[in-house]
Image (cartoon, rainbow, N blue to C red):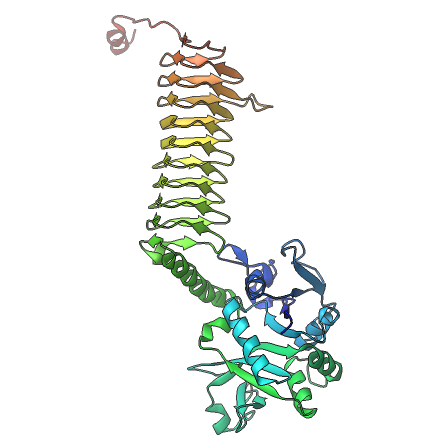
Length: 458
């Protein structure tokens, strides 16, 4: 069988979302909703993936490089949307049509549909599901040989007989076609209906009228084809997608202590034997190594963590933390913070755009911004790099094995040499040579009897 073409219909206006954001771009576990079927199609081995977009082209710039982008120039139904992609359909290859607002479809379901389509020899195969409550869905009426005779719509009273309403198998809106049969049928589909639109299911009627077979393949999991039309449905689908993500990580050797209060985005990678404690959120393009402890109450956004990292009660964004580091509790690593192996960012520490060398420690109550800290150095409590002069950012360089005493401020640009020290309470404005002690503070003066004079009003 030739590699299939997958057409994804994502041009819907989504008015029921009540949002200025196009429905296709509403985020679902860190990924725009319409990209879920895109990735499922790619994983299923699609030769071509074609996304049908709205005239405003909201998906432009959001699609992977391999995905082709076409525009439905006006909203005239699902059949009209597939026509917009007709130029990308090969007559001798199968075509799968997916909905961009049904994000839970999987690569396995697509492959299963294609296999069933090939076995049936039919011109079209619809994916069906059985629902406990099929109200409002089109019922699939099968013939004695198991083929599809018709789909009975049930939106209005009288559309279906009591026997037809008793059918639990419904049309999911996902189809596989033989490419040539689809193209021929689309030419014959008309807009002869109250809405004046071209409907893709009418292509099945056309094919049966031409004597071609229409088959059905029942999916075992009805959640695969759940659609999203409003934010309430989006929340329901998000819960199912999150459970799927959690299960995938658990089967790969990750312990998620309390899945009910843990959020992990679709594109996050986590190594085996890592433990994710409760109330932790792993978002975006985050990568976590093995044997890590994340949380409780930790947020990672686009962060890179090596092996054996511990991060309790902290917030990390677009930073890199290498093997064996400890972060937190109550630490904030901002973009381009880089902790080298064995480094520490402790309690109430904020680090931004800085290199913290191997084994270096910033234990507590410090701000390190735009700095380079050498390996083995220790920055005492209350260390501040004053990196901004009101107009420009400047860099602080602290060498190897430096001992910075408490309440030291470095007014950048300034360099502290290897093995140097600073005295407590110093404001360092000039370079400190290697091995030297930098002292920059006023001498202490005690005023005797000061308390008595204040009490007497003097």
